[in-house]
Length: 305
Image (cartoon, rainbow, N blue to C red; front, side, top):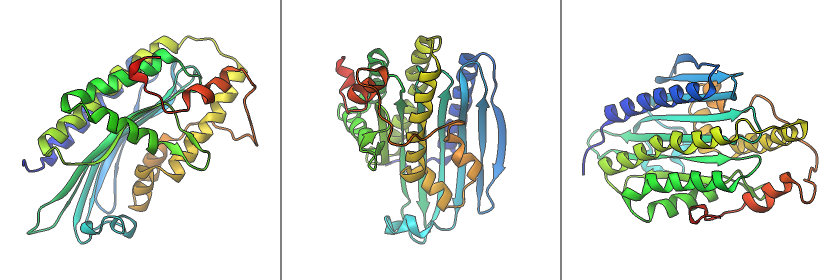
């Protein structure tokens, strides 16, 4: 089994951040990312890039981080006791894009690598990540494209990979207190090391590279769809669910905050405007009701509609 190549992973992640930012800037056509490099007092740092008030993107962030330290917080070692007493490094790229137009879905992607080392012992390491789509107004064509692109990224590594990561995504991006999914899913994986370092790294790269081909065709199809105040209000209402998930359940957010990460970068995923309406329900037969009835349910989109 190949030894983990931390330098190769970091080089890939930095390059991926650059490629994704360039593609999103071209798609937006007006706004550019601003860059904020930062250092973590306990070890490491990162490169946060944020775009806002564009022609397409209301707010988006593409964050690279590489943090390290002599030990993990107790909340982490409680679940993984084999990590106790080990020096750790965690690096990754995480992004969220919140478009202006309610007919363009919000998208999220993340790829990451974790390694914990101790002199005289084998390192403990794994990859994680994925991408998922959160539409406000569902569209079958978009869901099929998103999932077929996800499947194509996984297929070279085994026919079981996409179904497993797809199911994991459906289960992970789920608001238990609301009894509803966050969106229409995609891919999610964690603790990936069973393929060996080379193949695990290759699978992570394949998924990271698939985000732009999965998302931008959807953006281009929906960005000019006319909308009004009703659609905007519904978008802000549904963004509230996004905030709830990130602050209550998301592992990356919780790990970042508990390990002393940079708060501004960790919370860049939150939308710029949001609303919570008391006991709101969509009108029967409306576009908004269709989101709940058809799209916020697990579905085998790669098989078509």
